[in-house]
Length: 169
Image (cartoon, rainbow, N blue to C red):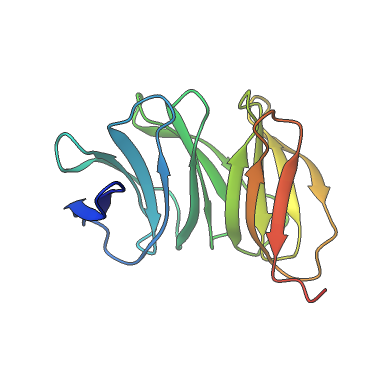
């Protein structure tokens, strides 16, 4: 749903997913588009000028829990219960890369570095993983939580990644 935050009024309802919508991300360079990921295993590109979905991206085999635009606004990344993170190109209308490692748990959250070189995924195995978008490989694992990583965010200056979890401490 698209809301007018000044008036609290519902401006438009967007419904094309075949299941619950788990995550949305507004385009950082185009105020008219956003992407969504849902329990139908699909990522969708929406245009508010057209009041609907303009492209559907497939490739995941389970729920998409997280979606995030790449900093340039032409790509986006997803994280799914199928244990993969994926990078999609909006202009080419295709998947560029799947990041699948030895981890077999779902992904709950994703983020990009400011340059877009690094793609971060928060997993149900209590860890976060860093992938190199240019070399298409896993760089390292960030450990420290004692429960699933539930959210993450990049600092405005790009110097720090914050992660949240269902930790017991």
